Length: 71
Image (tube, rainbow, N blue to C red):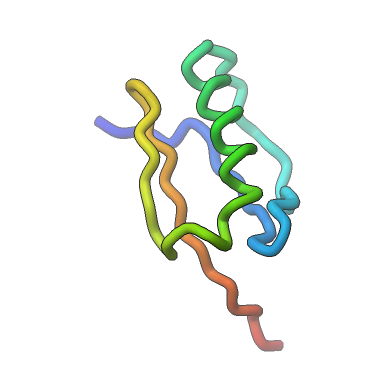
């Protein structure tokens, strides 16, 4: 069964994190995934709207939306 271990919201333009992390898993694999995520979040504008990065036993799933909500 798949389980979400971490979730983040970042700005596509520059990779700035817009949400705080609430994940408490400190395993080596999860820490490695966070490192990949930080690196890739700066390149989101170059990636497809949806993609998956497989890092060992974990997957990093991206879903990009560049549109701003209308109020």
